[in-house]
Amino acid sequence: MDRIKRVIQLIFRNLYYYRVDYIRTFAILRIVQAFILLPIIWLITAVVMDITGVQVITQDSILYLLTNPFALFGIGIILFIGIVFIYYELGFLILLAYYQQRGIPYTWKELLKRLNQKVVYFISLQTLLIAVYLLLLIPLISSFLPVSLIQNINIPSFIIDELLNSRNGTFLYVVLIIILSFIGLRFIFTWPFFTVYQEVSIVEALKMSWQFSKRKLIETVGMIGVIVIVNITLLLFALFIVLTPLFIIERFKPSWGLVTASFTMTLAQGVIILFFTILQVLFTQLIVMGAFQLTRHKPLIIQEEPFRLTIRQWSFLIAVYAFFLVSGINYINLGKTIYEPDTNIVSHRGFMDGGVENTLSAIEAAKEADADLVEIDIQQTKDGEFVVYHDKTLSRLSGEDDIIYDLTLNELVTTTVLADGFSDTIASFEEVLEMSHDLNIKLLIELKTHGFETDDFLQRFVDLLDEYDALDYHYVQSPDLPTMELLEELEPRVHTGHVYSIAYGKLPESNADFISVEQSFATKNIQQQVEDRDMELFVWTINDESDMQKFYEKNVNGVITDHPDEALSIREKFDEKQNFLQRILNKIKIIY
Image 1 (cartoon, helix red, strand yellow):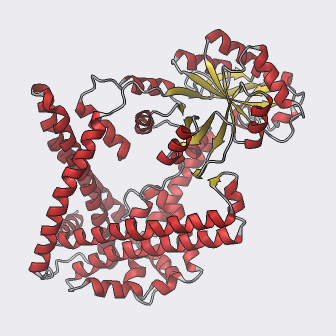
Image 2 (spheres, one colour):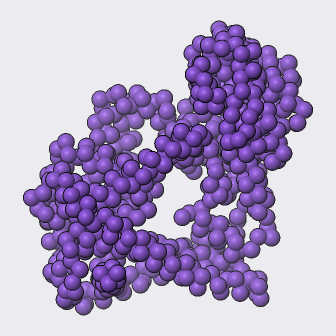
Image 3 (cartoon, one colour):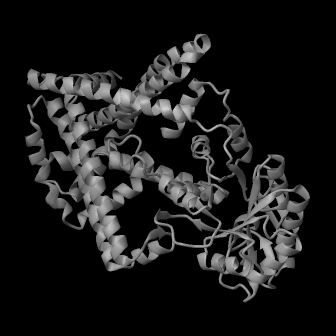
């Protein structure tokens, strides 16, 4: 316990004394990233897309890109540039911590020269090893790593949601998280060893970390936990101090609310950025201290005071300028917050808190939860009919291995499906159309094509909609774009849409009425393209409260969610009576 206390004290001492160095380091790294690195990556991406003739990267075109030699070369260059930048970013912080903890004087030129000497190791197959290492581990621990490029990388929500839809998937996900977290902790000293030891290769650094962490794993986890808890506690206290004046002013002088809120929002953003930056520095200091056993007090390095004073002066001037600039932006944004958004709540596969997905009971539960639409999945059966079911096989919900297109409608609708304590039978599409008519609720119908459809399956589908007088009532979507184009030609009255799990670039020209895109790719650019084409935008699958708030603020046409009750509750909070403090808290959740 005394050792942990001593380590924490040393880390915070270094953070405070060398704060000017860290301000300079983070400023330079962010400038390089914003004005050099990202433009280069954007340019390479644009050149690759132009030469290969790919206007938009989707789940279909990405397969072509991964088999195109020039595209693979471009991807390799981007990967190499990204890894090298991460090396320099982490390397500077590691060397700063190492020199500070050993009490060795240093200059930026010296640190840069030392890092340059090891770049040669990345011009080898070892780069692929580091790429795999980063891709596997960073989505799990990116919030704690001092690497700006990968802090927003995470496992896509729809993949996690699909895994958690079954017991086996949930078990697999938990086991995977435990294994990857364990691997990440065992390799946590790789970068310090590789950066500091001049003759050590990437492979050797990985081996050294694996061996060294064997006896330091528990202690390292404990100290990381202490640092995170202390940092978050101080952050919450600082936010309380920042937000309290706004709380008081809104009670006694509400006319000052908007101006005060704009300054408060800026301060809150600054505090959050500051504390997460501090967390990155603390993390680096801790890992370096643990890797090289530098737990004894060393003399602080005497630094040039005029230079430090210049940095402080410029930092102060830039901070003041940024404060008023961002406050002005916040003043505008807080003043035009959307009230009562038009966003429709689309209940994903019905409401699974009230029944098995895609069954009549789940659809009825979605209606009771006041969803605006219900999303369902349909497939054609062996006898040419349509059944409401998501997977290709029955195994996940019924325990049977039969494939949907190998069974008739009668065989399927008599099959019992089970999930989360609920039981029901598979529904036919006709049953769902009839229920939607009786309940007066619209459907978002996803056509699942398996390649064994009848030649006239689209005509049969249109005839069913026509039979229930629903040609222009429901929405129909599919990731199979040619199928949607054929449906649009066959019956223009049907509201057709394209489903994208990946969407980057210029959307292809089409006659579709809407697009449905995975939330990670529902960017401002995509939304603007959709609006310019007078289309609608649906976003899936939104289950997190902050994500719901974000897309309500964007006022997209629909959010597809597993929790329509929560989505409704959040949507109802968007009104003009909502105080500025609550609006700021909402925006903080969205941003961070």
